[in-house]
Image 1 (spheres, rainbow, N blue to C red):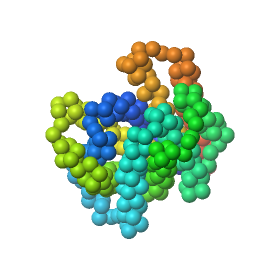
Image 2: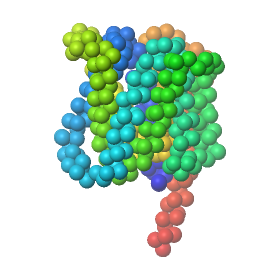
Image 3: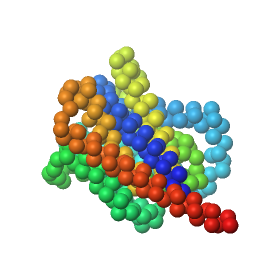
Image 4: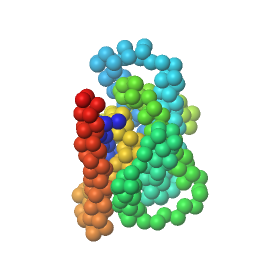
Length: 310
């Protein structure tokens, strides 16, 4: 994997983090407006699934479906189940049972599980500088959330299970992205996932689902914003995974908390604390180190190419 591709992947991961930060902020408002959370998530994911199917049709990428191998089809199905359906149910069900800060801290451990899986299954290597970057970004989030006692409650275990499933999705996606168009992977994730979520909603909350499209103007407004943000998130995230190591992408995504906190300071609390300033500095340092490592590798790779040509 070339350094230029890694740099491109980091840029895309930062863009994904920005979108995720906005999405986290907006979802707090949207979930309160559209209930229950499972039905809201199912409908939101279904709308995104329809959008990406529209993209496949408009760009003629649907023709590439015929070229998929059996192994790739199996991976796409697993991504839809493991990444696009079950973890959403577990996450939002668990989140309704525990404090939001506890859920956020558990979810932010995603990059740890991705790294644990990426090293043996993807043969990814992490340099000392990259480890430092990961620690800085994690510390940035830790000083906001603090030490949250883990009680092993059902809600906590649900959120942890969702986080572990999303980490597995990262590995599965990374496995097939070199040969499968990212838009097809997104379509599988959102299409298959939303069908399963809608089925679960029909069983768990049939009345709420039947009234799902009978929303007020305000509810449609929030639904529209969350759909656009989720669409942007998955489109940039899978492209980031295509170009950069899964460990780097997952680590950079943790910086989304910084964006959420900035938005909260502007629109909710109207205050910027010293702790938030420290968080900002640590996050920027962590992301900056990732860029530094990628840039340092680039000259060496260019020299190697010149030597090979000679």
